Length: 302
Image (cartoon, rainbow, N blue to C red; front, side, top):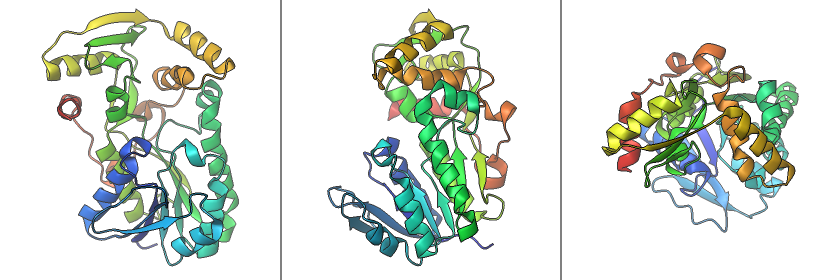
């Protein structure tokens, strides 16, 4: 199977899923071998220089999607929770348009690991999308689920990973040495490009990449080095955080239950240390691993 060069990226707003769509588009543009189309909502302000942007009705009618996907090799979804439960529209449109490869908005934890799905049930929506895609294989649509671990950029800047970059405080779980996979937006974008260039190798597969396998203590050290500041550290246990996250989930407070997702990434046996629990595809896809100190310093500089 030859490289997939005619590519549709759905959801490339710079305000989208951790700016991932915009990063992917810029990587594909820089490569120079791809013909890129961006699909966004009419209400979106998305505008990318040098790329064809198609504005569809905000409800993404299937007939408009089919027209947008016609003649394309691949569809890359970088949408957020706004379209969860609607992915079948995009998948069916891709089938009818004759698209060869569908890359769903996976980009995160290992959703084929049952422990991860049990810990954070909202991840089940992503697993259901893969089930839908498997059902379409007989129709000629192939897929690749790209797992990248926690987004380092977003995880540090938003405080999701437990670090406050302004106040120089950190909350460390257990001994802080548990290793997990994490990726920068730049590495994720390169991985998408790699999948499109290696369609045969990545057909109907979960593909795992990372910028590095790191730990909370390593991130703390890198932050202190990059900012030239000593952090004030508090400690907690995974048991306490999981119990609190489950209590928040039971109350319907999905935002505060995010610590369950963090737990799934930090705890062993949840498949999120890709180097040890899965197979890393970095070499196959041409995605070099990064130096943790350099990556953190770049995030701090903005």
